[in-house]
Image (cartoon, rainbow, N blue to C red; front, side):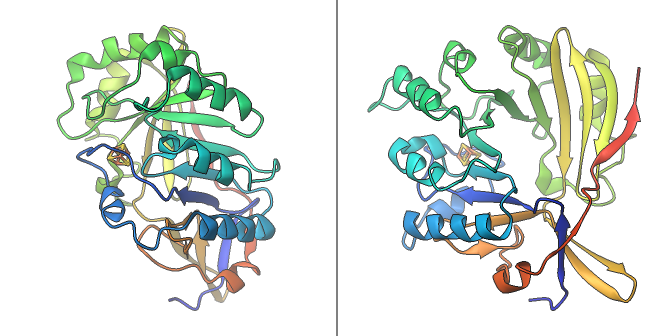
Length: 293
Ligand code: SF4
């Protein structure tokens, strides 16, 4: 573990919580699936304790629930959501599955009951179908803000892009297209000339601007009435940088794993919680880099 002091953005690094139960899918780009192969040691109680720890240190940070599949166990999701005070924004990454033991209405009722707790539900719907999908109508009627996440993976079918955007324009749900982040490097994060996705989106949509920081960037577009972004992020979440005579580990994401362990990066590094209690805050470096009128 590095001895560098921590720095993070105002409000604190985003805390991503891996729920202690699996999805029933096998997406080819999934980097989390393997961890759900052996569930021994998974603990909802320990996750809840870690949520409390992170709330205590950074009471205004964002929380993201991911998996696995957060909505696979509504009772457990409810218990974990109930641990997060309202000072935080809460996002849920999901395929919004409908399983045999529940109706679509059960899913909507859950969202309705928790609409004060959930900032946005990010629903994976890829251009190529990898998972059993619930109806678009159901997704369109979720009573909290929603966004579609779509990984444009390897040789994705470009010819399907406009139909895909029309599909979500019908419900007014914004789309975030994503570069496969396992392929992102500091060199290609802002590289535009050879970026096929960027070129395709510029062909079909109106480009409106670019925002970004050290770690990630977003190209913004409109398509008919719809807002779209194309998001790229590095596969790790710590930037090592010198300020004066001190070298800092600048943290963007903190992870609560399925067994409750708190990691300081996606590569398995454990967070030094005591050190993080003394984290130095800096203004968030995300800013508009280009705005097109
Ligand atoms: S649904 Fe999500 S967690 Fe499950 S295999 Fe696909 S990407 Fe991985």
